[in-house]
Length: 337
Image (cartoon, rainbow, N blue to C red):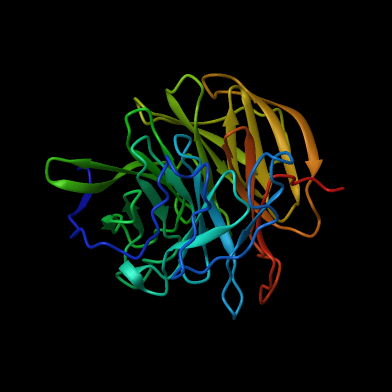
């Protein structure tokens, strides 16, 4: 029997700053009541694409993980692991602002992967937020910051790591603790989450973070998911839900975290290995060929990335610092110099 959890959430409005699309080209999105940190430039491409976007951190130190991008508006969203805040920026400005508070607001004390659908709705993976606490595992918000859903996934060992929007408009979340993918969608009775695929018996989990980064294949018939502990890539068929290994020719992808697909190019962000791998991914996702491995900035632990308006934005997590200190940044130049 398919296990499904349903939640219908009251639409309480949260503190937010609206970034009107029509006005964004002429004025930076700033509010007197919102913490901001100046970025390296006030306007975008006057002097070429920005190389960094500054994030706001807490006095006690902040660490970051996920990023979602809205291609329609140029907005991007970054998750804060320490507290669960969500920060928002615009591709053409070097500063961001805290868009959604954390520290327990809407039951969120931490956050991981983020994505945005075609309607501008923001999906947030909660990592271990719900383990042993009864708190939500994931959230969905409107672009205005209105809470649409706060859901618990079926099961008691759920670490939701990353999320991607499928061709059906649903959001697919990976579970790092058990080889599972959950599907989240809205229907006639509200938002719901189901255990969509359980690959136990096919994917062997090891100690650490297993399933993580996820993208849709070019032919839009499957998901490709990274297993960070082993460096394997896995194909989840969207029609049959069958799971199979992606043939990579033995490419070393250990530490694989975020995935970015542009056409047949797959970028694999290898966090603590401080490497970025580029592969040529076959349209069906059944095989991939390593093109190159490049060292990333040794002063950063990059976790994931998203493309937005002609640039790729990488999150500097600060995971290598016991107590993180600024500057806190999203970068577009990730490689070692």
